[in-house]
Image (cartoon, rainbow, N blue to C red; front, side, top):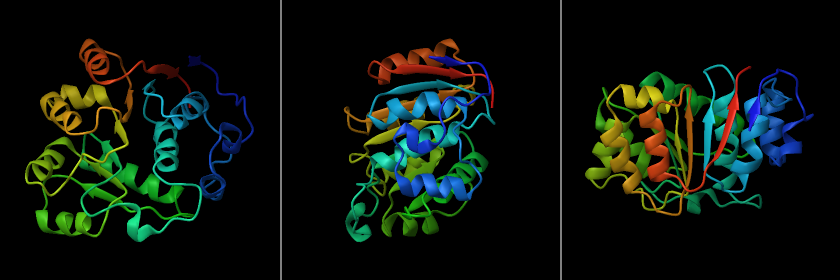
Length: 227
């Protein structure tokens, strides 16, 4: 599937099947109409389909994978947040290339979920372990982090990926260029086989395609060139 023009083909995120609370949060943020990559990615992702999205930074890809991720890990009914996710056992895992990207993505997810606050925790290297361990022990719904630190905590049994329902690999081409392939493969192997996997990348180089073929199940491919 491909979108090449900036014009919207739907009038709101509600038309794509997004929950009212998420729609209202985006409208309040000044994002009432979905961008092309969001129009293409969200409907299929909401059904649990594996997804490969080719989109550059600035085209709205964070919302494209973030809304399905948030909606799929929480029931539209009332939720007891004390029971939603056990300490260190997130239902959603989002792997990013850098600390800066992880912080940006986490902020976007928290903004989108203001109507139904989610516990989004950011895990990255270069800082002390203790605050991150405390955050995990408080309970986590979405774990956003860089491969190295995520793998460290998983090997220490502080992070249990056996309950993950949704995995997102953001900027996969840069992740592999930075030498994180082995870490990413190890992390994916720690998650359930029947998870949903979404991979977003600006380019589809051969190692990204190989990774997708190895760890994704009949993914839908979408490509959006414009913001």
